[in-house]
Length: 490
Ligand SMILES: Cc1ncc(COP(=O)(O)O)c(C=O)c1O
Image (cartoon, rainbow, N blue to C red):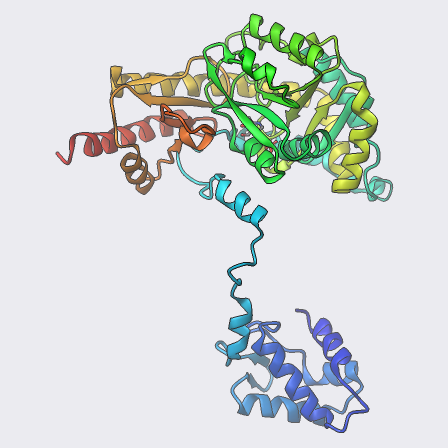
């Protein structure tokens, strides 16, 4: 707390008409602020002179109050260096008690969210899934573009966003998506969001009611399932195989409100939705009036062939809501993403977006618009694709050389991760725990399983942020740990 802020706080607390002297009042208020942690241990207090001026109180009164606090063990000070709260001030016992969370403080919905939360706490270590190589990002260009909008233009961009976001960004995205992904839309259909989770939240809140059913891929990213659960919507896990989500008659017959899919690169298994399943999904959506939520999270990262076109581009009935993100193609901390909604939903979705989240960050949106329209995004992708391709190839090679036939890997030359399964039973818990001790982070496939039946578990191995050398080292460590946990200590 700054010196003048402390003075303001004390000013508000002093009661000049009270029978209690100002010295006593100062003593009591400072003591309470130290005991309840408002004034942190070892923090510096304003000088008695400045405090006296700010409070309009004689300096002698302040010095006397500080002397009492010093005598009682709250303050230390020396002439010339100032007055400080002691390192370990006496803490009132009830302060601690009020900080403990009462057992019923977390709501039932809160408990549901916390029990289903499986996001990684650990953000360091080899094989962290889904993260790009942030070191390869063109920061100099990005900074220049941001500076453009943090200078004289800032005043025009310092309010809330209106509509579905900054219009030039929506235009850039519509142009980019038309060419890169075959998405057919006008800029009004593009809504800028702060992460895919926000896009999903908006969709689920606006298009479903409690107890509605939503089909989700199984396995799939935990965030979608958690979102549904937290809003009381029932998710129906649908098996994924080599052809993507395997929607059967019974799934269509239950008339889901939404179907969540990752058709161009299923997360986490990597399959591509086959053309017969795509056609049926689009046909059924048109006939039964459900919405397809197409999460195209990493479609730009294909290394051997062009990605399959977006479902949105093939949808003639306006039933597809298309989602994209900048987390993979730029960096995850940017928290910028977008959705392309059918024209029938534009007005409701924009109103929902504005009223639920009060979006902003217009300077960032403006810089992003230029980053795309000036061609920097495409150039960055051209630079990183060969990097990621080489890393995936290296990971496959190292794993094949060390593990041979003991493992199977997901197919597909795309994305930022591979999935690994062992052909024979392996103690995955032990392997995961031992590997973590050697900075090898193994994300369990079962973290993405939403069904109760048997599930073939394994690991998701992210390679995007690992150099070729680091990949070799991490695989070697993984194999050493595998040998000790699988065969017992040598
Ligand atoms: C399936 C899927 N969708 C979307 C995302 C990106 O989410 P966000 O935009 O919140 O970073 C990820 C990230 O790993 C993902 O796996």
